[in-house]
Amino acid sequence: MTILKPAIFTLFAVAALTACQGAEAPVKENMTTEKAEPTPRAMTNKDKFTYANYDEVRVTHVDLNLDVNFDAKVLDGIATIDFERVKSDADTLVLDTKDLLIKSVRIFSGGIAEGVTDYTMDAADKVLGEALRIPLTDKTDQVLISYRTSPSAEGLQWLSPEQTAGKKHPFLFSQAQALNARTMAPLQDTPAVRMTYSATLRVPDGLLPLMSASQGAKDANGEYRFEMPQPIPSYLLAIAVGDIKFKPINDHIGVYAEEYILDAAAEEFSETPQMEEANTKLYGPYLWGRYDLIVLPPSFPYGGMENPRLSFLTPTLVAGDKSLTNVVAHELAHSWSGNLVTNATWRDAWLNEGFTSYVENRVMEELYGERRAVMEQVLDMEGMKRAISEAKRPELTHLKMPEDMEHPDDAFTLVSYIKGANFLFFLEDRFGRAKFDPFLKAWFNENAFKAVTTEDFLDYLNVNLRKDNPEAVTDVEIDAWVYGPGLPETARKPESDAFSAVDAQSADWVSGTVKASELETDAWSTHEWLHFLNNLPQGITEAQFAELDDTFSLTGTQNAETAFAWYMQAIKGGYDAAYPELENFLMTVGRGKFIYRLYGALKSSEREDLQFWAADIYEAARPGYHPIAQRRIDAIMNK
Ligand code: BES
Ligand code: ZN
Image (tube, rainbow, N blue to C red):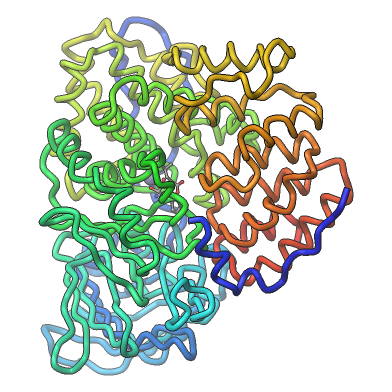
């Protein structure tokens, strides 16, 4: 085979980039007479990924006054922090910081300066950063911190003009979840604490700043002012700055993007208003004011991020046929599950992601019907089974994550998402939609703007649903879902007729009964293609790969999900003809869902030439990847 040298300049040449787009866990009362084996329960629900002393002092509001300095690649300015005392004798405010340069700390009481204070910084921890300890007087209720971020802050990606589609202006975007708000500002960086925020930003001429807040216009001083009046956890703090244009979809929903993709994105996401209506019908009103979307540069490492009022999206969703809009349904659904009712610790991430994946699927069903919703359930189920089989240890396949998990990343696998969603499908099936839907609506309503634990949910379930329907589910069943490994036997088994038809055709082709050109694929949606590709049997020949490719032009396809599924098979099956386009994909797409597994498959390939090839591509592509993706792929490639 020919091994291609990576095209070193592709990364910076954006033609390519644009091509693609504290409390003890309560012990449950037994609801049934059945005897459950006692399961070791969560011992503590204190967030261990923060240094903040939030059981003593709670931040209530943060005001940021910042210069966005593209030359130095830093945010530079002042964070003013208001707080309340939980314990009246608290004499220290401990904040999270990571890679921040702290210049000075001043303390205030009732708006009157008390003076400059001698703060201390702990030694840096690789994951958690550095605790900033600020001594307080009895009266201190506000601190003012002068600081600047680091050019290598993990939560910020600074793109040069050449790395943007327009090529004239630089671009900055943030990604605070899970532990990176502390690389943007000193805060109590835990989902257990909520704060309102305001910001004043100064940006270079020609650039538009946006935040997860009300979008303020430029004032007479050339500054932009933002307000977020609803209290949010720190991981929802967000900023984007660039040559960004706006196109409305309706009176309170619209799309921001670089010009090149603005119209296409507005068209792709034109059904967002119907998604909001479906959500509202099921779970109550949207409480955040506007809902806008921003399509970020291709190095954005996620499919989407639910920043309030402004979901961040990867351009790989703009497929041209609305086939990948479930990600929008997902990020919008977080406006209820996650942003309104928030996991109190990352051990409870499934309360955000599992609930959201469930709501997402319900909304997809409302908009597009059961056929599409079930196809998505089956695809998700296949992905989750793989994630379960690949788990580093069985505890990471529980819904409640183990106390000693190393990094919140461990909680964001398809276990939290899809096992979580399936736990809710299980409850829905047992109690029936007539009871389960109002139950979930009440859960969101009664816990709005609160942080909740897994145990809070189980208590709520006991009191509000199980008490009146004691036969519907048993403690043992619930325990298996929440505190047990793998996928419980009680899981729904979604079956898609559409996929059965695909399987039948696939089998005919694999056995040689029909040619690829005789397959009836005209009516296949992206979902059917994904099912077909993901389930190609082991051992299909190079000639069979080539036949598929010649017939359907899979190599280089513009739908990023289909391309990813095909390249995974091409790696497994040794179909070398796909590698130039696979290289192009790795050089131009920074979405972690795709590239982590592609690098993983190449690195673990038995073929040394592929391992070397992947290392060369990564070396060339790495500078263009987001710092989060760099960290993750460094680990995969043992850098
Ligand atoms: N909140 C997540 C993204 C995230 C997870 C950021 C963990 C940081 C740490 C977002 O809502 C999400 O789940 N995105 C998914 C899309 C979804 C349809 C599964 C993604 O990015 O693929
Ligand atoms: Zn999510």
